Amino acid sequence: MSDLTLLVMAAGMGSRYGGLKQLDPVGPNGETIIDYSVHDAIRAGFNKVVFIVRDEFKSDFENQITNKYNNSIAVEFSIQDIDDLPKGYSSPSAREKPWGTGQAVLSAMDIINEPFIVINGDDFYGSKSFKLIADYYNNGSAGFCMVAFLLKNTLSDHGGVSRGVCEIENGYLSTIVETHEIIKSNNTLSSSSDRLLNGEELVSMNMWGFTPELFIYLKEGFNNFLEQHGEELKSEYLIPSVVNELINSKQETVHVLHSDASWFGVTYKEDKPFVKSQILKLIESGAYPSKLFN
Image 1 (cartoon, one colour):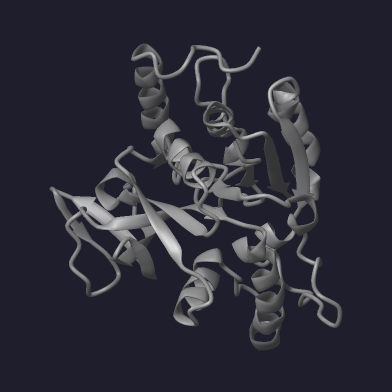
Image 2 (cartoon, rainbow, N blue to C red):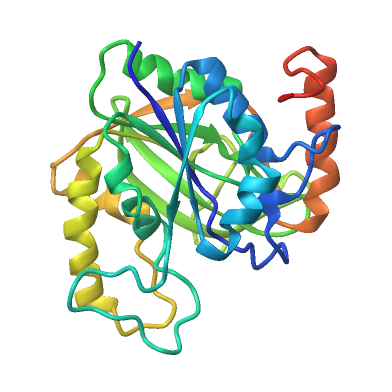
């Protein structure tokens, strides 16, 4: 079995949610969504988890989340900092947030030397999704991959969401189209784009499988990004954009793994009761123990 690392992006504050939602309990014994992801990763054979956090939240993560994993999986931290930039660049003084998911993943470059999965810390992906990627690498694959979900399984009842709609050719990703303000109402979908959506589209929920070669691309790409956007206050260096560039330039291919699991997350505070009820159903079905970690 290959060494596999779970890389959890947890540096965001959750502006629509109104707080650090990664620390919010959703399970019957105070479990967070991250706890379920780590539990699923351990069951799938992962042997290390790296958390990308802001420095000011690291102690909260250690106290509320990661200390309980000590006997189950190796834990490391990577700090995403707004001023962690290549030599010759500096953040505008009025900029408030770090530089996006590309910078977040790049921050872990020195502590990951094996295939790794990137996930959002506030999304529930389901155990099958972790097993899909673990099997992909354990069966000898050495490239990039992603888990795609059905759009209809990823929506919120409490407001619009943004999703990366995937175009796929022969099992490989050809492009991701970021589509914003997707809203379901009376069994129909609307969005900010002209594209008609029916819910059967495959979307990316930021569950990626990468090898360490990604860091080489990210490092070079971040320099180029800052050259063009380094003076902007809200521009972000994003993983889907990097992946699109690598595909378009034919430097990499991305194998698409299909998950029929229902993704869920807490985009809005109003989503939390639904998430808690879904987790309770999974516990009652035997998918999870009532208490994940002792």
